[in-house]
Length: 300
Image (cartoon, rainbow, N blue to C red; front, side, top):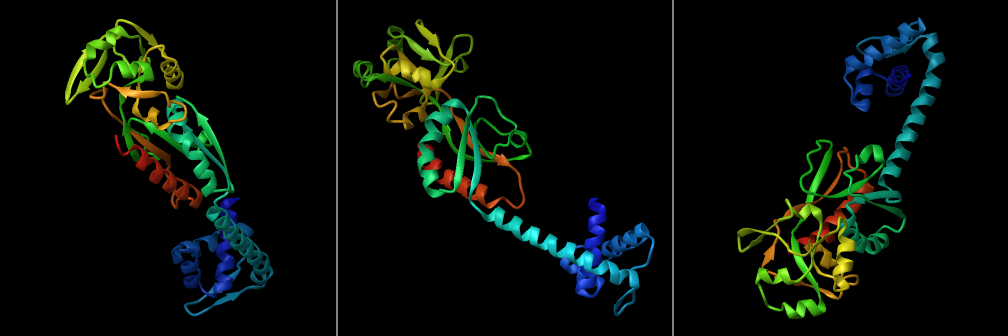
């Protein structure tokens, strides 16, 4: 069906433009390609449609009979392309963003009110998932990811870095004020994501020097929002990404302790499927998020 449609369109544009040369310029195809399409159309319907000389095109009776229907198809295709361009330029409709649970909670969600104000006709859908979703099949427009994006089908922009640090509630933070003695952690329960551990050991650094540390009292929690909630209640000291402090409303009773110590840093990126040209809606939302998130995360 697509081949037959292209043949008719090539015939219509030659009729409308008056020559194969002019049609090739309009369609951005070679003159040989245009001629082959018309020859294939003539072979398919079993009749000659036009006589071609170096100066002009002369339609046969069959060509005249087919011309109006072919031109109608051509005009419809132009109208469809025009509407498609308008749709592509429109910043409206559904827009799906995915991020790991912690990044969705502490990095993305605080941005949504501002994004909604900037793009009032967009319906945002947030998919918080620790699975690395395949964006195109899952219908996802944009992803926030950590680490390195190795998928050649994706474009990725680094918007900042993150590293694990220690958090404590107001009372505990007061007791540890200005101290950098890591041994003091042995007097407290440590709240840790299993991803931060290697055989129950933590690898943490101070001024470029890395050491192995094994907590005596430890509770493992796979989701940082739950881990931070327990730390806020005074149950223990949290070891979690520094971006968790971005949500000051949720974690207003928490502050960093042992601030010279931290885990190794990792990149935070915006990723989206490669498209050329880039849809206007995606381009504008990516630009807005890159600007706002980079300003929030560049302290890392």
